[in-house]
Image (cartoon, rainbow, N blue to C red; front, side, top):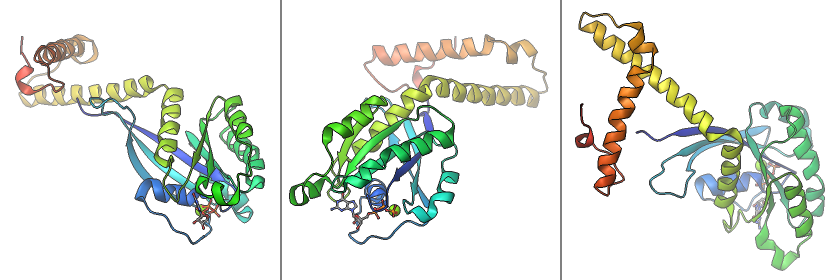
Amino acid sequence: MSKIIYKYKVLILGDPAVGKTSLLQRFVKDEFKVDYQATIGATFLTKEIKISEDKADNTTAQLSLWDVGGQSRFIDLRTTFYRGANGALIVFDLIREKTFEEIEVWYSEMCKTLNKEIVPFVLIGNKSDLIKSEGRKVNINHAKKFAKDRKSLYIETSAKTGMNVEKAFKELTRIIAEKEGGEDVDLRKMKSEAFFIKSKIREYIKSEGYQTSIDLIDGNVLNEIIIEILDKAIAIAKSDGRKTVQPSDIEYF
Ligand SMILES: Nc1nc2c(ncn2[C@@H]2O[C@H](COP(=O)(O)OP(=O)(O)OP(=O)(O)O)[C@@H](O)[C@H]2O)c(=O)[nH]1
Ligand SMILES: [Mg+2]
């Protein structure tokens, strides 16, 4: 069976210069730039990631990652990018306390714009590589509490060294997948695939000069036959100690 793909829109939010663009560049391109160039409006990148740690499970999420400029002159514009978002990384700078104080504003702005009480997010304290030389300016327990009170997670990252960057995006994807009810999305996709397969079957029967009875297409007969064949094939692969189902496993009645 082909791999299942979920599509999520993810926002990266937070005050100017906290490292939103840098986190994205590290995650998508494994790059880091020392120079600061404020993001104008918003930009977006995409990346596909595997959701499950299980090697046999190829379920992936296709993320469209929206890097929203933190400068206040873009304030009127930025909420237009929030539409349809499934979740966010909300970022502050571990060595600038003011950026942590603004976290609440970013979170509530997002919830209000999306018209939801709770939106999946991961709270990010970035620039952890600077703690040693500059000193931590944000109390770790306050950051943890903010996340915990909203049933979420707090992760410290460094876009410079790459520490925890992938983990942050993966955890967020996992939280979104839990909330969105992965199985529902699955089912919807499977249904549309089943519809496609059935229309192909109808086309084939027609090309042979025959009509298809409604019962065959609309009822469960066809589904049950296909599932029975697939279950047998899976059982054969299993008895063989294989994780891959191959054509020779298919038994036609
Ligand atoms: N030492 C260190 N510097 C970082 C880190 N992340 C970002 N920076 C630096 O911080 C500055 C701002 O980073 P950006 O990623 O451009 O910040 P931003 O949040 O996208 O800012 P806006 O686009 O204005 O909202 C740049 O000079 C980066 O090199 C980090 O983890 N460690
Ligand atoms: Mg930026």
